[in-house]
Every structure is written in C-alpha cells, then in structure tokens.
Length: 158
Image (cartoon, rainbow, N blue to C red; front, side):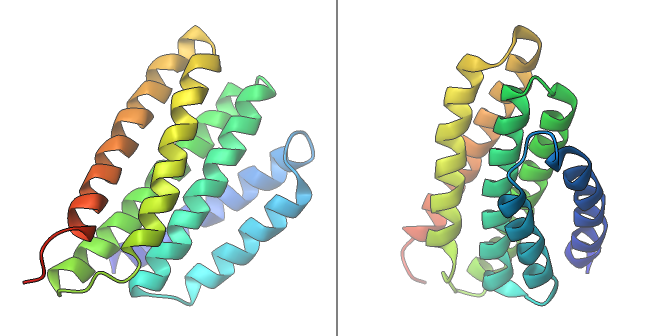
C-alpha cells in the first residue's frame, strides 16, 4: 500500500518538474514517453510494475545527465532523487516476488540498474566538484542494488 502511495505522490511532483525544465533541456519526445510510463505504472503491480519503475529510473538518469550537462544542478539533483526512488521501489517489489519464489522481472530490472550504474560512473567524472559526492553516493547505491539483484537472479531455487 505504501508503494502505491509513493507512486501517486512522487510522479505527480516530478511531472511538474519535468514540464518546467523540458523546454530548456529535455527532449519533448522523452518527456512524452515518460508520461506514458507513469500512466502504465499506475495500472500495474508486481514484477510488471517493477520493470516499468526500472525503465522510469533509466529515464530519470537521462534527465539528470542532461540537466548536469546544461549546468542545472538543482534539476539534476531532483532527477537523481527520483531515479533512486524508482529503483528502490522496483527492487522492493522484486524482493516481495523473490520471497514468494518468483524471479520474473529481475533480469529486466537488473539490466536497467546496471546501465544506470555504468552511466553514473561516467557522470561522476564529468560533474563539478560540488556534485561529485552526490553522484558517487548514487554510484555506490546502484552498485549495491545491482549486486542484490544478481544475488536474487542466480540464487538456487528453493
């Protein structure tokens, strides 16, 4: 129930933020695709929702990267927070599935988390000094998430 509440509250705030910066740095097609993902997520549950959230996290990473390149650290910070929230929600949903003995969706989520993690490593080298600590923390967090997902993916069947 808490996850659903977060899905309702967090994306609504991000939608307003995306709309406010999209004219400046974001590709309108990406913003439109993101809005479609939000609508799709509102109708899903379980591993399908986790997969959609992981895809949204990948979009959040792209938005953060674009914002950093446009020297808009404030927007980038918001996208990084949203990226982390979406990834954490996806992993929490999958953890529930794993406890039930199901591995559906783990591979898709892991691939997105891994891509984000690699992107963040490159981003860490290109951002300003003040942002490096935040990006480094995100790198560490996504590395941990990726490790956890791989543990679930390759765990022996019980």
